Amino acid sequence: MKRSLVFIATVLFLTLSCKDAERKPEHRDVPADKMMQQDGHFIQIALNKLISSKDTICGMSLKDSVADTLQINNQIYGFCSKGCKEAFIRKQQ
Image (tube, rainbow, N blue to C red; front, side, top):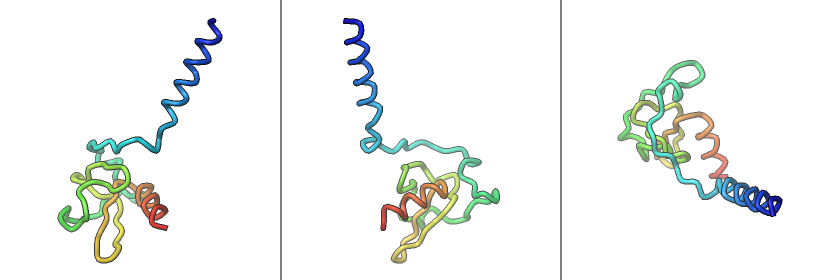
């Protein structure tokens, strides 16, 4: 009986924790130091020039700063990090 409960609990835990594809963006502010480029600088760009005021990949707000951008078809996408930009590029391929 005890082994069955442990097995069921383990299966439930693994099932619920492996739903990364269904996760929604966090939509939270990010400290500016987390959004810096590796050289410690931010990209200076007005938010109204970007396609969205949130990172297209993770949904984080870009109102404090933009770490990286990408221009596609005369539209500029802003990203909170180089990793999100790379993920966006992979999705486009």
